[in-house]
Length: 117
Image 1 (tube, rainbow, N blue to C red):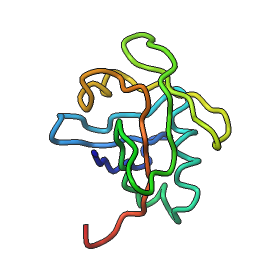
Image 2: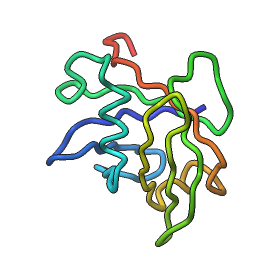
Image 3: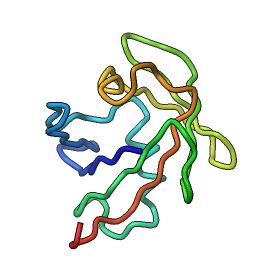
Image 4: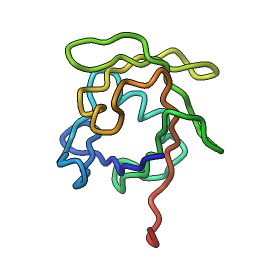
């Protein structure tokens, strides 16, 4: 399982990950809208940011699952799986800093940031 801490910057969700050298890596092409759905239950997510747990395997309490749809321009399109409304989003090649290959399914959970973490 991996964790990033997305935050709102210049009109989209971005994240930093010093371990991979990513700084203000933006989510684009449908993924910001998917994230908006994931954080609906987190007060002030855009102002405070949030924790995003993700894995290629299911984990206890995962919130949503996204199925690989197709490869495109170096990245991978994913779509929501039921019971979530149909949505699609493109994950850029930064995905391969976390996975050797694009996983068939990515499981996620959005959590509020805690001061003690």
